[in-house]
Image (tube, rainbow, N blue to C red; front, top):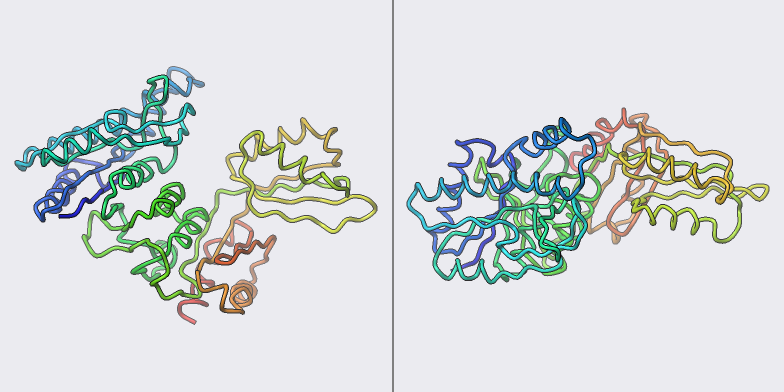
Length: 402
């Protein structure tokens, strides 16, 4: 008998027919002799609908009250799925995040899980029940409801799997695995049988939307075996695990992120401590910075260019202009019409020439590179947003069909 955690996203539970499909998947796993814990997201566009309803009453509601409101979406899903499973004649119970023992910090809307006290889940499993848990939510030390932010249900599932020592954590989505590129952009993209935690983490961070990076980080830390599968096709999915027993591919995937912005701080003093001033200021406001490029100093001045999430562009502009005198720069330039395209592969470090192949593909397509960032298992380039789809296709063609 195995202990399996299964997570179903919003599209998988979007309506009655899909809930019945999920109930069949869950009960089939249970009938096979396994203990089953299920984590669910809110149905379809429920979260967006709640946000719109809140805006009709208050344009700037408190994050605490928004968490109370948004957590209701997952509770609807868990109750409906429990009813569907009851209808099939199986023992089942639904639990909210706090009933399941998910304790978080006090950061409303983007809380982090501090620990999972899974006694209630274990007790229900010992009674041979299927346990359904509302994802995306927990409770803080003030006994307030908190939500976990983007990808919160994935994170909930992995955290529960880690706490219970589950044999497998399955993430059910509307795709049947991890592909070498987004199949909507590249029709001949290939499904991967397996991928390492590090590769999956890079792909998730770089724009691949199959798994959220926080859940992959947690899975790696606690050695939780993940599998990405489709709730619609029921085909074998993609295993995410440690790579020691896996053949390392030069490139495992191509990812695109159209939600980034390029910031250039022009004519800063060319002296020690300037970069520290800039990036410590941004860190104070919790701004994540990615690719960084510093120009060669001339006449005692230099420029620093970096990328940030697009939704932080306006805020960063205000922060920098407010601190212009202290930082002593001439001007700033912010461009949101850019995209980051990346290749990821655990085998890059031992295979020279990968970067040259990527750059050759872009050059042949007439696509200009604005910035470059590399690590042992990834190469990212910043390009014009209008070129991003074409860039993904030509890079994928070079590495997988060349």
